[in-house]
Length: 340
Image (cartoon, rainbow, N blue to C red):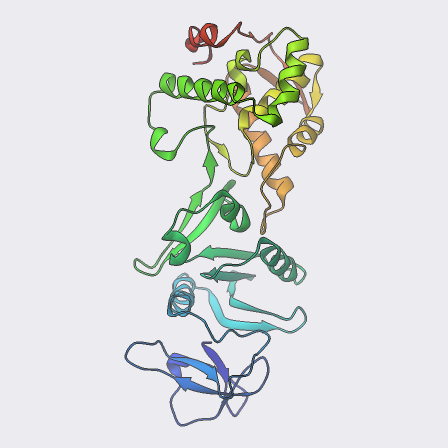
């Protein structure tokens, strides 16, 4: 840990402390000693190696270094920053407590693995004290491919986008990386021509249907009764632009559910949101799932309004025109230009 109490009860940061002195843990009040050397950052450790409920003795250099850098980062912006603040009412220790323009928030710099339930519980603990929390990921997460469940665990709203916060201890920069996905596409494919992306997506859909994906069975049967094919659905159902991440399945499955509902009658936005919530989503730790679902729906409706597919007025959505369904895979690919 980086903060201890002096004999006079004041808090002191390890890189400002000198030996000899008597220091105690701010949480459990037991003795701690100052450690420093040519390799390790200055830090405090419990003398008797007892297990303190809120302090980890196995804290990495990367984590300590990141916290100190983030403290300097926010101080440079004019904020007041307290390091490793223990909040007894919720029994949690915040990496940083930042006060900026009269507003307080917590920064959690995460390097170690943690369950989504713990992230959610800690977030709710801080929110119970009216303290918003920023979860920022360190190098250990960035050195590997960050999976969708991990992104969901730490994602938060930033500038009306769903983002993941990343701190570089090398460049000392904070990046808010938007989490957006497109069905069937890797990041490297997003710069391909639109018609090529459309072909890729239809092909992947056809492959899923050929493999008789179990969760699509009900949908296939429903459309068959309407003399329709899943692969023949309107181009408006395809996710051809990036949408907020978090869906476990394909974007097109949820967009198709919305179109099928709108074909029956105009829908309230709240009714469409209910359909969105019925899809399978990742477990989110920091941001309420309903906010992600609302953001997703808003972006879909904005896209459809731009394409003159729907009209939205007074929280009510209706189709502006009858959408074309295609006979089969080949017929659809022959009409790529209909959703340009």
